[in-house]
Image (cartoon, rainbow, N blue to C red; front, side, top):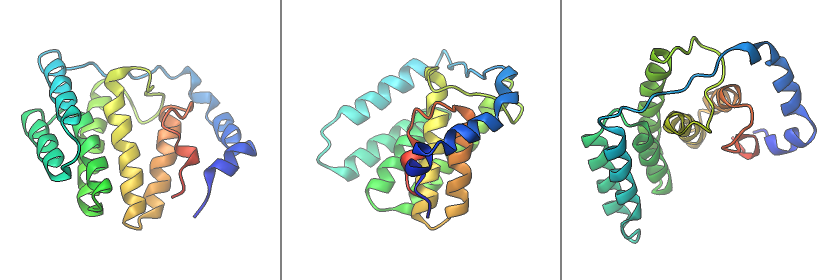
Length: 172
């Protein structure tokens, strides 16, 4: 297992960023929120997360209810993956994260992404996709898929080299 925090301090991340400089001319991909669903989905997710946290099973049910009501809302899949990881159900976490990842790939491709270029975190509609990739990285590492975890880390750094999710500091 590599510790990327040390590599980052040694400038390794900068070297990787330098290799991606030709992509700087690639336009950013900014997902559009689904106007009919995005506001309600975000409100439903906020309510599910704000409810008393003492009962992990109840939280999972609330998140699953949001996913059933808004299956294209990427953020809920990422939160379900994080919930499952926290509960120790690594296989479910992997499945939830992979769902968000694949739905997100479909969405960024539809938005014009052609396999390269930034998908910045600062644009709120992109966050569900990026969070899903992050949870996929964590879940892959948890089930021993270290090559996939590394690919997810590299993918996140390519999508947003500023590393807003701190993936360089995560051991996988």
